[in-house]
Length: 303
Length: 293
Image 1 (spheres, rainbow over the protein chains, first blue to last red):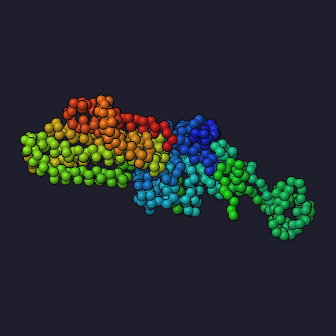
Image 2: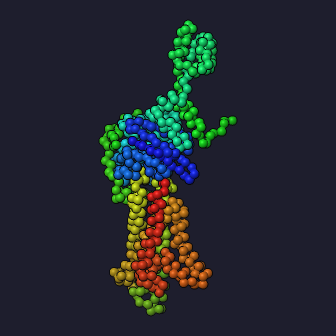
């Protein structure tokens, strides 16, 4: 369980995290979203004791991270793919970490196997690709078999197989009752992985709810209608709160009415409908809509 | 919570072996120390620095062997006794430990700065979050490594110098206090002075910054004070300051007895060297334990 209470971090005049509070429950994957500079990584670093809060606190299983007697058993974290000396081999890096908790070499070999690093474990880390470094970070995080996992952008640099592996791993870890806290900018992945979302904007929490609720709350439901009598049905559905967007001679989209109301209206008009499909907003749509005002570095338009 | 983990595998969809939860012990100072020791052994740069120190010593020993003939001739002209000549032979060879101090100080600085420059500090503190434990475990491991290496260099020096001094019949009494003090003090000076490099590394985080500052402290101190002495027309307070400069303290400590009227007593010189080391290590520790990693 990760609990933040009035957590705040400032760097001079800049406020990176502005008094946020949340509690992450075990058995769930909690996605941590926000534009660049929103304070996600700073929050995770404070959870791991790397940065000191200016005010407030963040605890793991009821204690500040530094107070745990066997921290690798409590928390595993991937905060940066480059958190290892490039001159060591992957196996050396893991054995060094294992030595701090008297973890066996057999367990080191086990996590190497688990993360698919067996063929490169004896190579120096400076020769690793970003994806291999991410896997090494995940291996280190799993070393102590912790109940809490913190992953900051764990799928950066991974190939599609690696992305799917991380997704399955994260789901499995949460399924075992662990608390999983994961940040990513890949909304499609987060939609498939997370149960719950915390969205930061300029250091403050702007959403803290289940993924489904988040999409429903911020997204806009549309309904795709296909009928041979599209013009007649569009006339029958027209109203002040309804938007109709024609796609082709037989297909149009309706905003402002649900599928049940459209079906009922078609029946009243005696029209045959071939398709009536609710179109939900994607997580990306909802996220961009919610965080639009919080983006600090906005891209220019494409020419 | 230490929940049972059924493993994901590197290849999606592959069979997942069952396993029991691994044995995970609490972090102790000795476990942190062992991890730091493994880090030192795993880093190739450290072995290059060791090789450089050994090469430096070998070159010095060759030069000593070649110059011994002239030392003997000089001794016979001045009528010096064989025992004193033998001791001079050892002192000449052991003077190289001043340069070894430079290399070992750089090694100590790199041991801590490389944690920051490589980013490995994040995984290190994830395993040992108590920064005081981490800092002093690393310091002890680094000084232990340097102490062991310096001991090897001392043994190597003996292996060359003993037959040489025997050949010229100037073999000093092997168990004589002067020789043993020379050996111990040379070793101790390397280890204590290296701690200054470690402290500077913790303070500055930058390898270049720490090594340059360390060299400036060791080499520029005497030069700057010499210039100041000339400019001030031999002011007494400058002379006084020069007694407390690192090089002067090293020389006074190794000399064993106060060889000049301005020299400090040997125990005081040793103590002041420790104060120099503390002056770098303590602020380094305070900054390391309070600053964001």
